[in-house]
Image (tube, rainbow, N blue to C red; front, side):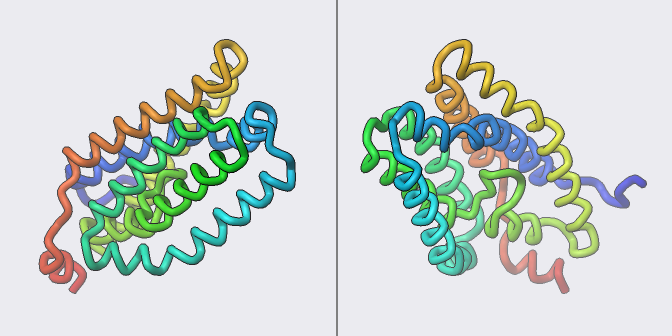
Length: 206
């Protein structure tokens, strides 16, 4: 069944951003704990402490992140996430101690929670709010479903690519490549996405 409307240009750009950024993120997401233990040398307890701290940070900052998105706009907050997250992937490869890894992962969690840019797959508070600002209410589920599907299909082989790069070249290479794709997606987002004025979005919702 075809959608009964044309995708706005900004949504098309956001789909590209999501595909490029999520491919890199998925490429290394499953390998981050492996890298922490096998390469940096963390214990299971230390890794558990990092994961717990990240969850606490994400929970504590989710609400303030939403408030900041409403106050300053979606685009600036999304950019925070899409710049900080790739840089922390590079930071993981530069870490050699538990303290350094802990700091990098906490920074990643702070950037993700405040930015809400949807680096994981195809969502995030500010990201979803921007879609809601652009797309009429009756078409939002279609747009979000399309975005999630395309991101998932293109990103499906990314973990295999990450594993191949790890084994064939070095454990650092997948993270470095993910950083590059993340920054590229941030640049595309910064140049190609225009956030609508709030008065316009309120009129569209009504």
